[in-house]
Image 1 (cartoon, rainbow, N blue to C red):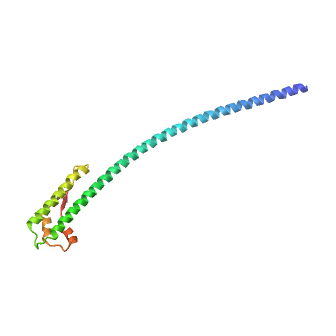
Image 2 (cartoon, rainbow, N blue to C red; image 1 turned 90 degrees about the vertical axis):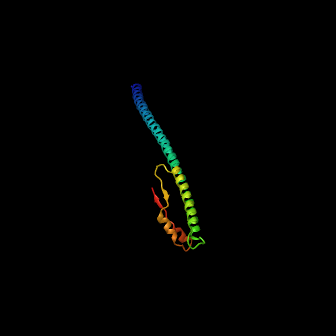
Image 3 (cartoon, rainbow, N blue to C red; image 1 turned 60 degrees about the vertical axis):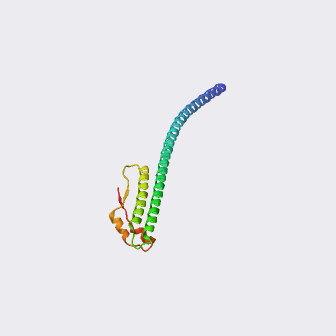
Amino acid sequence: MHGERIQELLRERRKERDKENSRQRESTAQLETTMTSREKIYKDRIRSLETQNESLKERLSKEMRSRQKFISGASAINQEATELRQNLDASLFTVAHSPNARLDAGLLDRESTRLSSAADIYSTRSHSHRRSGSHSRLIRTAGSVDNLNRTPAGPADAKRTLSFNTYT
């Protein structure tokens, strides 16, 4: 009897151990399935983020190139405006400091030609810098020459004596 009781207890122990092993195998299988699913989800997410990263890099690169072109164009236009302003200042200074009390027509014609060629150079250059077909042209009008009839007091006054109308 005592031996049978021990045998019976051992069988119950084995059954419990088998049940526990079976539960652990199921739990392990479920964990492996869960881990495999998460791994797949994470890999998909990584691929998606890498694709998004490449797309953003491309956009950034395009934006940088676009801004660089804009900055280069703006610098060129600024340089051209500075050159045009220097030509205008020099011409006005020449006219303002003419030794004759009255301005002679030859001096006005030379300075007018000088300014026209400077404006033409600027106009020609601005065609290459602008995308659209419209551009500004400097046109000398009769009213602007009338401004030269008074003698300016100094270089600062000379800058204000000649006016150009801008048409687009």
